[in-house]
Length: 144
Image 1 (cartoon, rainbow, N blue to C red):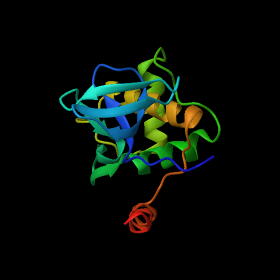
Image 2 (image 1 turned 180 degrees about the vertical axis):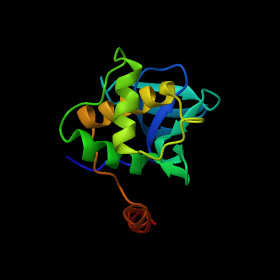
Image 3 (image 1 turned 135 degrees about the vertical axis):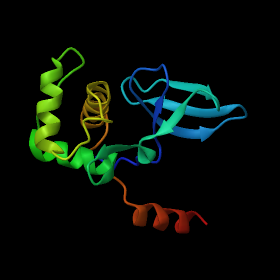
Image 4 (image 1 turned 45 degrees about the vertical axis):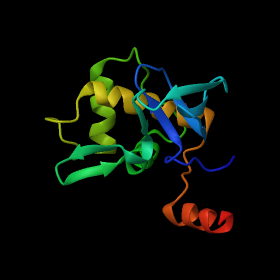
């Protein structure tokens, strides 16, 4: 399985799941759902965020999602993260093990639930092996 590029992995406000960036369109972006592979066009003001740009709050500052996913994988091994219907205590227990220094004042259970949902989507439909900045730069050099 190929590596997942978090710079091209998108969360879209109001939409379930994750999307892979395919191309720019006249009005926004063409994306493909990780889950069912259906392609859609979303306007530029649809609330599109790359997972590369997301961090969680810790007592030492911010931790990139890529690092959070790696720490979750260390704890979960091949198991899925708690699902949407799990009790709040399951989410806090997971993050207490995976990222014990998370900032409970600014990283809420609702955020944990979203991160777990994304983790499961990546684990089941893509890869938890992520493209590095160096690999992205090397790819850009080849295309130039």
